[in-house]
Length: 285
Image (cartoon, one colour):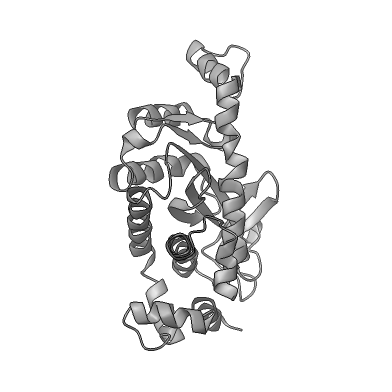
């Protein structure tokens, strides 16, 4: 199956259920796969804005409490063969089917992955839902995306006074990020590395992280954003990615996040359910 057919299959899943969505959007049939293909090359920025709009709606209707939110990323394998670093440095593409936009990224649990990275900020608590998302090549470090993601979320979707804590893994242990967080009205909580001559301000961070309150706050990470990301990947089958090229991959991945938000909202409104796993049943039923 080529990438265009994969796109059409992905976006046209569950035709009976999607007929209701198409009717609400003023459509009479699933658009042609070439239409999807063209739109995915330009749609990623538009989708991020719609994700922000959905987040505002979720907060406004009090479906979520953003008092504690979590940030994380996940590597997604590129479609096709890998592009080895030696060939990449020479600018040589040894075979067809390689996604030349993808890059190598490292995961402590999965090792080196050739592909892309999905960055997510999520709610914690009973209702788990993405609040912000971005998409990069696999070589972009998590701390590089912290500023733009938290900036867009706190200026356009969630009043900053509603957020008190942002939790992340050790990849966000960066003094610049602590300063950014304080300037935006919340605290960043993540594992803090202790050095031989750790400065006093850093010792305060360590002390809070290791305190009973700090550990209670941080414990929400493993119960929220980690399973949420894995669930999104499982529901929409985006790892490995079904398409090649940065723009198409960004479009399909961010569209998955947006659709997940919409389904959580729909599920909450119609079924009065806050269980994220029922989302998969909605798509497959």
